[in-house]
Structures are given as structure tokens and as C-alpha cells.
Length: 247
Image 1 (cartoon, rainbow, N blue to C red):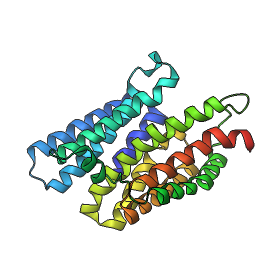
Image 2 (image 1 turned 90 degrees about the horizontal axis):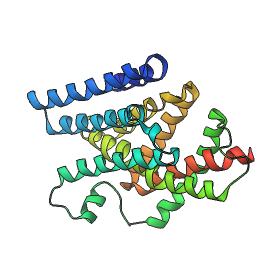
Image 3 (image 1 turned 135 degrees about the horizontal axis):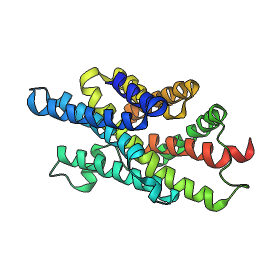
Image 4 (image 1 turned 60 degrees about the horizontal axis):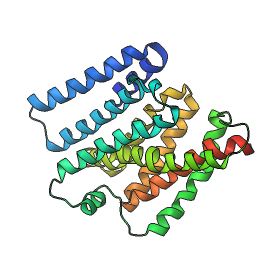
């Protein structure tokens, strides 16, 4: 499955966006067909359904006519759908859960909240390292408080929350039941890296894989998604809203 995801991303980025989208669509249809007609374990079906959400995410990012929207709406537009799919998947598994129970089942807990926010400082050196890999240009001529605040909101509420929900709380957690704890961290990190093929950078793939190991390790160790969300958000804020102005 990881090979398939790398292949889809490679085709999207280097060969044909339309062909990559069609492959993602065909793969999601095949997966759901197989789940429907073949007697497989609930654990494997759960993992495959989570991969299908990832394929939908690929199609959302690549196939919908987002150019009709302001670029300011792109991130919340895509990740609101990702979050909705993630919570729908979780609620389908726990239909009688309260909202608090549903959040806790995903690892979104209030316990050790201060510690988990402090863990987020790990994102500072990670974001600085990723900057020197990608070297994104400053999005504004000078440092802008409004851009910094917008980036902080987008990265924390949408991107980091959406991706950690998908890659750690859903994919890693479902793989853990099949492959074991350590292997689930490895495979979810590899899948996380595959989704960053769009940057056309081998060093970036290696960096994202390593970051995925760190994020997955924190989630496995603490059982709490808050820490990985904050690390992820801080990394992206440093990468996009701080380092381009100070490096």
C-alpha cells in the first residue's frame, strides 16, 4: 500500500496530475470493493478504510477546482473536509460515544496539557532544519504580524490537527493492531513521507520520514495527540512564518 501511495504521488508530481487523480480514485474504489466482497478481518478493513481517506485527501488537494477560491480559503477548505472525514470515521466506530469520549478515543485529551504544549518546542529546531532543506521564499516583503497570526491559526487548527488526526490517530493506530507498536510508527512515517513527494526533494522526504517517526513516537509513548499536533504546527510556523525573515 505504501508503494501504491508513492506511485500515485510520483505520477501526480512528475508525470500527469490527471492520471494521478484517476489512479487515486480507482484505488479507493478497488479498496472499498474488496472490503465489501472479501471476508477480511475488521482490523485490516479499518486500516484500508483509513488509507482510502488518505486517497480522498490526495484527490481533494489535486483535483477540486480550488482556483475558484481565494488562496486564503484553500487550507481551511481542504482540511475542514479532512477533519470531517476523520471524525466521521471515528464516530462510525463508536456510534454511542459522547463528543468527549470520541475525542479521547482519538487521543485528544486534557491530561498533561501543559506538558504536551511544552513538547511543541521540539517543532522549533525541526522547522528550522526543514527551512534549510526547502528554502521557501518570504511570502510578504517584510515580517507581517497578520500573516504570522493567520499562519499560526491555519497550521494549528487545520493542517497540524488534520494531518495528525489522519496519520497518527487513524492510520498509525489502525496499523498498530496489525503490525505492532514499533512497526506502526515506521509505516505511518513512511506513508507520511510519501505524501510529501510534491516537494520534489529527496532530502525533504528523508526529513519528513524522520519527523514522522518523532511524531508517531510521541503519540505511541503518550497516547495523546496534543503533543504531535503542537510539534507539527510549530514546525510549520517556523518554516513558513519565521525563518524566511531571519535566515
